[in-house]
Amino acid sequence: MTTPPGSTLVGPELFSLSGRTALVTGAGSGIGRRIAIGLAQAGADVACLDRVAAGVAETVSTIEGLGRRAIALTGDVTDPDDLAAATASTETELGDLTVAVNCAGIASATPAEDLDVADWNRTIAVNLTGVFLSCQAEARRMFAHGGGTIVNIASMSGVIANRGLKQAHYNSSKAGVIHLTKSLATEWVDRGVRVNAISPGYTATPMNTRPEMVDQMRVFESETPMQRSASVDEMVGPAVFLASPASSYCTGVDLLVDGGFTCW
Image 1 (spheres, rainbow, N blue to C red):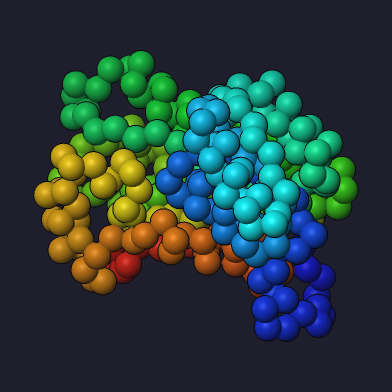
Image 2: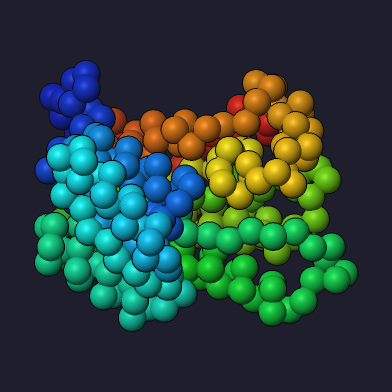
């Protein structure tokens, strides 16, 4: 829930998620897995949703090793019924849903003139419609018990067109996530639900650390003011901040976490 004006929380308490129940989509790998674990490290119990059961089971095992409760959920973020079931299971097994982080997404690169409409539609369906449907299902639960906070994972590719990458479909989907976040933030502000976004820059996820990506990542790093890519660990702090009372006056924010890339 949002922290009311005049809160007396100080220091580490501002960033504590103790007593909160969180749901993370895309929790089976990469940024989603690390954020799910990070929320647990901040004190939350976490429901972990992904399409692949094996990955999400590993995330749950790690969280339980931290002494927090967690459940593994499988489902497709493009399916409203899967999301309704996931939010229901979250509340039945862990408690009232008050934090959600929507990380599920896909990426590919194809010249626009060669892009098949099926690839376009699939990217928009997962990256944008999937985020909307996730927010919708999560907010419905949050409305019922006074509010909560939602964090959507967008991308700096929603703000810029990356040099050397031909991904009009991906860029458009992430730009949509950013504006969707702002739209929902203003629509739900009087219902106690804050909605913010994180836009990561180039990050060392399993997708980006494949052998065939080594040379391309070196180029990206050379074009970044900090001269390196982010680790997935570096997405945890921003997520905990936006999920916690520390960001109680933030809604509709798109937090760029890009090593300064979009400054140049």
